[in-house]
Amino acid sequence: MAMGFSTAQTYRYVLLPMALRIVIPPLTSESMNIVKNSSVAFAVSIAELTFFARQSGEETSAPVQMYRRSPSSTPSPRSRSTASCPSSRRRRACPASWWPAASGGTDMLGNLDLSFFSWDLLAPFVIRGLIFSLWLTVVATVGGMVFGTVLALMRLSGKKALDIPAAAYVNTMRSIPLVMVLLWFYLLIPFAIGRPIGAEMSAVITFVAFEAAYFSEIVRAGIQSIPKGQVNAGYALGMSYQQNMKLVILPQAFRNMLPVFLTQTIILFQDTSLVYAIGAYDMLKGFETAGKNLGRPVEAYLLAAVLYFLMCLALSALVRRIQLKVQIIR
Image 1 (cartoon, one colour):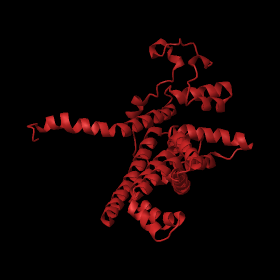
Image 2 (image 1 turned 90 degrees about the horizontal axis):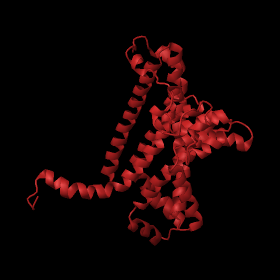
Image 3 (image 1 turned 30 degrees about the vertical axis):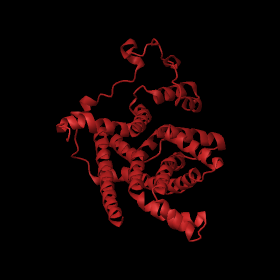
Image 4 (image 1 turned 120 degrees about the vertical axis):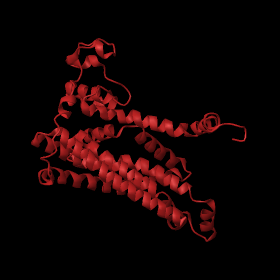
């Protein structure tokens, strides 16, 4: 402003260039998340990487090998039994029968009817799935927090024997789509132990292992946010490293990271809807079953979206209130 710039010029030549340079790392991270989340598109039969892996696994009777390959390589469309499509990636170059059929959603949207839905009709289908979704969220949060704290302490220990394995685990888990990890655990654990453990138990193990990588970064950031003076004060009182971490650092770190921790819990609750990929009966599966039995699948999915939205909105409001209280304490 002192140089005579207008508001628009100030944003264009001063603020935005500096802001873009600062946000490049988080933008890159978010771009990676978008690439990972694209794997969910196979649920609506969009021909992406996971879709080809699933199709190839079904047709070759080797699903484990296909899902192991899918994060790094795409099976050729020619491997499909119905493949007569040329190698070109353009959709118009392939016959219509080769690609997934359109869902016909336009016609279905014109016949929406929510009038006959009631809680008495939905409860037998939804309650069981809702209980499992909430239970999975709580178990994954507690287990992920405990495991994540151990990983964070390993990364902050300063010992390469602990730091390198923990960093490798965290970076690996954060680089793979959750739906792929679900499919891996669902297929590989029974293969390793020689007996099935069920979709629900596979989901619990997967979510604890996966969320621990994210919670560890939250805990690590919370520990590093503690001023050095607090750490040195603990040592000045004669505390050991374990006592200082237990009595001084971690209590303050957990308070600082509480809003971020709860935000990650909300994301975790939303991610529980992905367990449908392995056949677990969660809240989304309950709405899907109700829609099929009542002959109204579109309306059932809309109601599921509304319920997810309301629950996450309430939890977000709780996070904002807690964040204000934490700021007041500071």
